[in-house]
Length: 354
Ligand SMILES: *Cc1c(COP(=O)(O)O)cnc(C)c1O
View 1 (cartoon, rainbow, N blue to C red):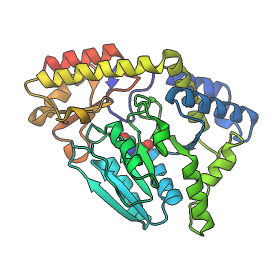
View 2: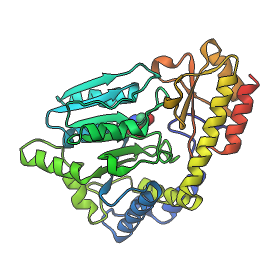
View 3: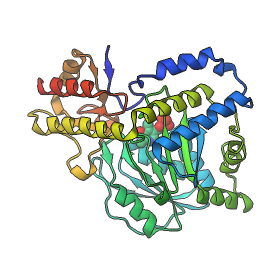
View 4: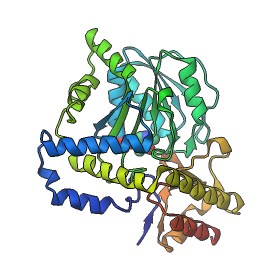
């Protein structure tokens, strides 16, 4: 069987298929989202996610269709006029553009692909968009930078894209207003579900915008999420199979232990970066150690890119292509909980034999 190292949709988690079959056997695809059974697994998923990621009760968890949707919801619910975005790759740029498309005064602070941000600064925006792990460039920003931005800009809402770093990243949620991700990356699930974590300040801001006559969207506005969430329900007919499966996978990960998962992730990224560092033909794309992502490792393969793909494919390894303009000379390797130690050791051996 081929191992999928693409960052997303990525390799399925070991138990995804079994839980999905179980969902079908229990009739979840045809179940009313106003039923008791729905409310029970909605609550179960909430509890397992809270336990896994140490999300405090000050923060709510809501379900969307994708992380892309959350960009739009953040702008609608939390921005009257101004937003500020740290842009260092394709995903952070898409969030910035969502602000512009929704007619906000969106400003970007940019860094070159492969570079990041480490010095907190004062900015002018109701929200600050930060991409913790830029999946397009393999850059992960230091947590001290994110917390420092909140400290320097206490009245702004700090919104963190952690799509490709959760569940590995260990946030202090008290220092962040909103965090979001989707499930086809670190949770090893089929695409089609986003998770939006917000604190009370975000709820208050959306209510304030609504009271002032702003449009904050319709069914997926924060007040609508909150009213339904209190009943363990969703505003619309949601992807209930995915909500169920996410809870089951989070439960499996809780049983395995998040510390063990994080330690294993570090082991796997360390051996891969070591292999790249000592390789004669392939290098790590992100040069600065402080920015090297543990969950998305990007290899600069230059003119050898196609032959590396061929070599790896022959060993049952499917690397992720470089993102966008980097496609012809980079390969991306996701390091998620679904990727075993043995698979990473095999990946390293295969790169070494190239
Ligand atoms: C994949 C990804 C997204 C988009 O997620 P969707 O589920 O496709 O909307 C956003 N941000 C980052 C960093 C990503 O890796």
